[in-house]
Length: 61
Image 1 (cartoon, rainbow, N blue to C red):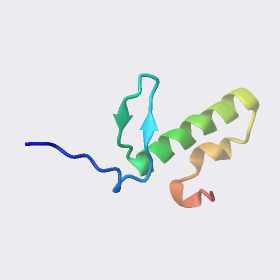
Image 2: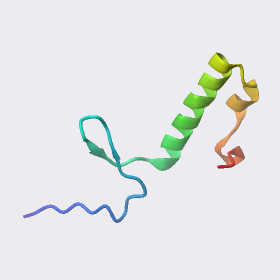
Image 3: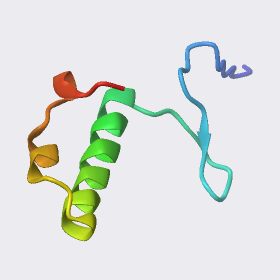
């Protein structure tokens, strides 16, 4: 029996360096990206620590 894979249900398609296709959990991915970038901005670039306390409901993008 042949297996079928459809990209129709995917919001985002991503490939890593070895061309692995994966399905992302968008809310968790956005949270991880935001938190990682906020930590970098606060620790390395001197941004306000308030960035670390924002919740996804506060995000405006």
